[in-house]
Amino acid sequence: MKINTVENRMNQTLVAIAAFCMLGSDTFSAETRPNILFCISDDQSYAHTGANGDPVVKTPAFDRIAREGLRFTHAFCDAPTCGPSRSAILTGQHIWRLEEAGNIHSTLPAKFATYSELLAEAGYSVGYTGKGWSPGRLEPGGRTANPAGEPFNRQNLKPPFKSIRATDYAGNFQDFLKQIPEDQPFCFWLGTSEPHRSYQLGAGKLTGKDPAKAVVPPIFPDNDIVRNDILDYLVEVEHFDGMVARAIAAIEELGELDNTIIVVTSDHGMPFPRAKASLYDAGSHVPLAIRWPKGIRKSGQVVTSFVNLSDLAPTFLEVADLEPPSAMTGRSLMDTFGRQLALERDAAFIAMERHDGCRKGGKGYPCRAIRTKDYLYIHNFEPTRWPSGSPDPAVCARSIPFGEIDTSPTKTFMMEHRNEHGVARLAELAFGMRPAEELYDLTSDPHQMVNVAGSAAMAETQASLRGRLFGHLRKTRDPRVVGGAVDWDYYPYYGKISTKGWSVDEKSR
Image (cartoon, rainbow, N blue to C red; front, side):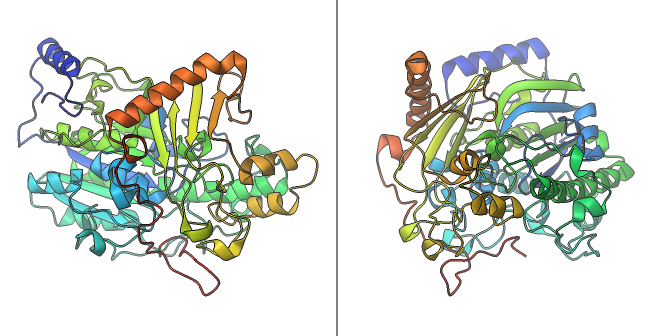
């Protein structure tokens, strides 16, 4: 196995050498390079799979991958917003290193190499269906094609609900498989638009789901409106999982299942208040399961190490026997597969710049976070700005109040009842202003509802986490910390603009 030089540090080199000597030669020849199937949903939080404990949602495909591979309990997106998260996955870099790609509805400059392009150059057949890199415009960044690969989108089906995209993602994957030359390895991105909003109202009940069994996080009011909104969301999670199941069956039929690394995850968390477009767990903690019998030494395990989704790019390159570019800040997951000595993975780093620009001047809400087992520390660089977007819809890209949060029955209820007992505090957490520093003790506050930053008892912990976060930002050359151009507020916005303000095409259909 090639030695990991992503961090370019002597101690990692020594670890990798020791691992190579301990495990023996595991180098993959060109003839045995594994296939890669990357399955990514759009807006799904960690909790919402059967394997991760949700009692209502049915996700047999994810559960199978977890059971026959590895289930990661501390996987985090690099940014809780579609385009930046996908840019980080493709490039293996933190979003603050990617210039315009740190914003949604922007571009991904061609100078940033992607794992998909490198695999194609190395002889892989590379394709995608559904939502690849998106939303935004690639041409301003010097690209003529989606970096996820060659598009396969001809197959459609009649969706079970009107809110679900008609694309037959699994059917398009089968089309892709048919055109691959014999013995050529493949890398395919299966990206659904589900469970992105909007949803068909009442879809959950129509599938027989019981609102009484829905798990309502304490960040939301607990009532029938919210419970049914969650059920409608779970219907679309199940649609994604069904596509994954069919894709797995197609590989199995080819006899390539054991030589294929299958990854199932999401770009970020659920489209609800204080979730998507926030650095809290509901927005950044994502499901992740990986199956690869030929590469994982002991399947069926739960991995508690912290990973960022940007770790996938160097992983895919390394399993193909390619050297990850030194620019990649992600670290290959081969150590979690048992093929190398384990690296220290006790924290994840998350960031936001401009989501939908729902503030005066189209500005974002720049923030950075470090997430460890016991704590979440967030640094907000512009605490005088509205974190969820301005309450004034006239200054919002989407012409809605608090426009960083997607319109939904849950959001509407919280806005309409925000001054009532039982809702006021939750609405303030979702829509209100936030201080420069936030610190949450996850042992007593797993949903991050009580900010303990500034308390004397937590002063040492706060200082330690702040130092560790800013040390990482300096090391990885974040312009907000090391200096240089800080242009995220001013990069062009390529989303759709309404006559009332700024408005976005929800599912990029």
